[in-house]
Length: 195
Image 1 (tube, rainbow, N blue to C red):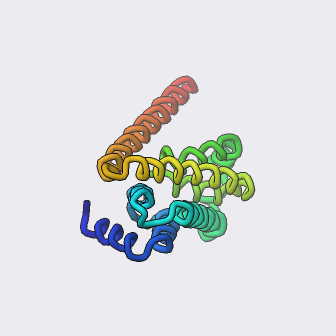
Image 2 (cartoon, one colour):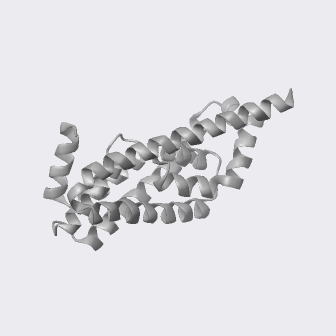
């Protein structure tokens, strides 16, 4: 682990749930912080009795959901700062239609399975004016799943949480690569059929 991650983990021991919630909030806004590692460490610390399980879970869920909500609002209101030609046209309307159809699943899955693309999905949801209530419903379900899954892994494998964290990061990276490959391949197939 890096020195910064070590400092965060020491801070988690010293400052507990406020640091956990704040870290997950900032990570949801795109600050490059080891959010999943912190969540797994918090799970391990609940097993060791350093943190209370209910408080840690609540801090994690609230921090992540609040950060996701803020990044949606940045996408929604920040997109008005873009030049008008970037905000209109068939490309934008097509993206909006696709997001209307698949947005809930995209938001839900990027909370815990495809986490590296969660921020772009949040910004896209906001910029396409995806309905707030549907967005937040998917966020809440996804973040609770993430906290239960990774916090639970940290709690259950308290002695090996660092190794499990590294392994899950590798699996998420592999899944993201597969998803991007399939999307790219399907785009090529669709384009070749049009010509």
